[in-house]
Amino acid sequence: MSTRFERMLLVVVLPLVLGCPAASGTDDEADGGAVDVPDPEAAGEIGAEEGGGSVGDAADGEDGSCPATAPNILGPFYLEGAPERSDLVETGMSGTRLTIAGAVLDSACVPIPGALLDFWQADDAGVYDNTGWRLRGRLYANSEGRWSLQTIVPGRYDTGGTFRPEHIHVRVSAPGHLLLTTQLYFPDDPFAATDPFYVPSLTMTVVDLPDGSRRATFDFVLLRPTTP
Ligand code: FE
Image (tube, rainbow, N blue to C red):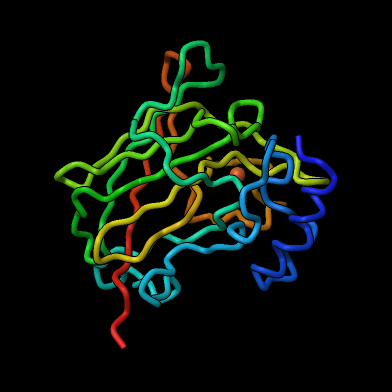
């Protein structure tokens, strides 16, 4: 669990980087089981910052285009260089098995083959592995822009007074498109309402399967940099 110093660091630094007073006291990932807290400044990074564009300029979909996926905070537990794999489940790992599948599209709803998806998440006890690669992995969309991930449902963790809803972090990138940093959430999570980072449009479609596992779907939509 996080030390008091780590907690204080996040409380002080994160709001400053975010430039968002509402983030005060809601240190994302604060109890994520950190051993070492990676660069806290990275915690304030919001997705889609490559090339100077803005996700907030996303199309509204009324003309048949695909609305850009909303960004969400990076959090302090991202580690660069996760192994390339689409199955994060390891022998003996506890937790509800979860398959997530979807596509990566551009704002014209055209698939982006070979898009890179970089996932990381807490285990079923709400703990991140910050010294190894457990529950971290990178994978590529196929020639049709489709991807699939095998993992477990992550646990919630205390951020100092409230629990973050279940979520899975991801960064999605492709040449010629803005980097998207975001998180995926689960439907009807009772902790979503009190979470300062929850975005409804980032909620996956999830079904419970007879074998006790869950299957989720979510499509990412990337933007191109805006031309000056
Ligand atoms: Fe997290």
